[in-house]
Length: 403
Image (cartoon, rainbow, N blue to C red; front, side):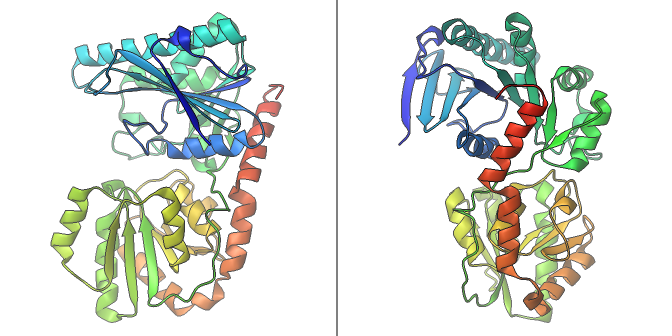
């Protein structure tokens, strides 16, 4: 059972026990953005099965009834403190950006000062996504002599990405390099992006800790599936190249009619555009956004996951599909090639619709060569809670942190 307490000042916040390990999450689910950084939350849940974890996340709330509130949520060995401060979230002007940052750092710093004075210094601060919490860790580390490590999940370091690292301001780039270079250790969910980070930060090594899927939720369930069902689950944003996927499967349907494509996710406006462009076609089902646990059921009732992204790091949805025993067709971007082999899927070049079409044909015609039970078994061993928790503990110990 999860318990929740709300406080109106940092000095009022109470914990059941001193925090040994503090995660500072720049991204994390909240009432403001319920799915933001949910993969970080799943990492925290996995690790908290082994050791206690305290997560702190700071975010604006346009509808906040007070200037600030601290919500403390506890379940098992995981404690989450979400700091909500009153702000519209609009940072389009210099003044509003300064105001936002001032409130963000003020309330976060106050909480850390209170926790460290009241409960003592933690063993380590663990930053998830360098900006903005990395700067919090640097300041707190200097003041309280607490080491920090960093985990990054974003694909923004890959070349050619809209609003990517190389297109951001000089101050942003300087801050990111500083956070990475002064951390005790750094991890990433893929080796591909890890190598780029190592180079820009002047580090010799970046540890790879994959995204996690709970095998009790995402697992293989034998079922008769008719017709052959492809599934795609994402935000359906341009990065995911939904237009390319739909064009390919529309062409496939002109050749054969023994399949359907299920799309999970997306906003109402985006789904309406798809509906208007493709109309009521028998091969396409638009399910919209569903709860995370429901995704597992859809995967168990499908034959193959399709990802055709323009850029990725190491997508959670691929991990979840593999744990469900699904072979995966994916573009060869970011860390996707690190998850997919001939035994569990097919890689295609990003944006190459001919290759995606050929891969879809091949999967349908040679589906018996994919052992779904074995795909699920191997994925659970690599990406299950047990393995990822062990990976984090090894990461800390190798960095000299006495977990």
